[in-house]
Length: 235
Image (tube, rainbow, N blue to C red):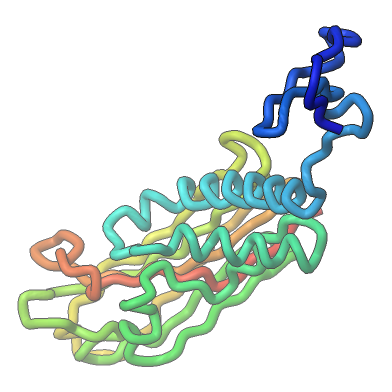
């Protein structure tokens, strides 16, 4: 209880602290000596969760930077973190597969840029990712935004490694040839293959499609798209 009258000597300066109130002063045992002072377990758990997924998300995001730097990404980093965090809560471990189907441009997703469907496959025995899309006689497999755009191309991308380690995510990609919107008078197909050497860690397989203008990537973000097609883990 607060001591209203005379304050007795401090029992132990190393263990007690003086408390002053409107009713008087008294000596109180320092926090953590009588009962261990611990952080609320849920707050501590959330703090660790946020730190782990934010760090992993930053490394994944950084690895994709060469193909995402010109995108209108808005709050896509927050989206990546939210998906990773949700997966960690559900599964008890970090799993990049939760990013499957994620468009890195919310306002300009891949489906709005492509004029038709495409196929992709993962040959786990031969360690190859493959991609295929039909190329029409003319008009292009990608939506032409204006007449200044002359051509288009596709890029398949593999991000792989350990997102828990600094510098743990590696990048590999294959770029198609440039296809002209006017076409060459014959229908065809674009076939791309990306080989890899499996190693312990996680992976993301992505597709980027982009329109070209005067030999360079067209300036407006709607002329390109980047999507995570799949993700998983190598043992």
